[in-house]
Image 1: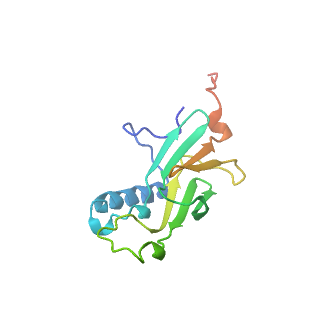
Image 2: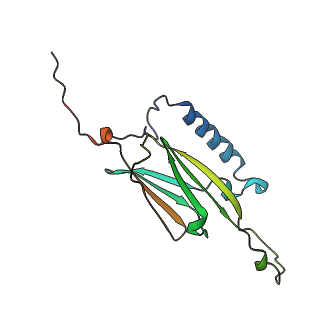
Image 3: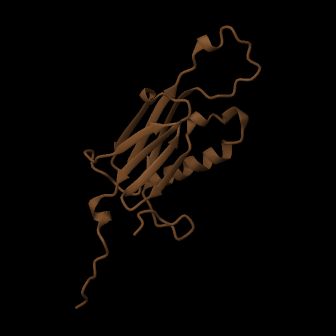
Length: 151
């Protein structure tokens, strides 16, 4: 049984935090193509997939150092934040004609379809610009279907 509501099917009512997340997406989509606001560090791209074991989350963070990324679990939210510093020494002897790569800090709160205890074992790795996070399903979500006798 999937913990996610279907992307194309009926959407179940969700908490207020879900509404906030949806509103964030509306504004991000609206401003995405505007040159003045198209800083990808405002909201890095995220993929979230459900597997038999849990949730697999992949976050694009190109050219980051692992030490500059923080990852925190807060119940039903995953917080990812960090900073990519602009190094002044890179520009001292150069006259740039174009400088499009993004620098600065970012913060992204990812709403999870379930809540996890603080002591839950979460696995995370960073390789080739992608942060991969594996969150186990809560015990009640892993149970198989139970037949209920009708009296």
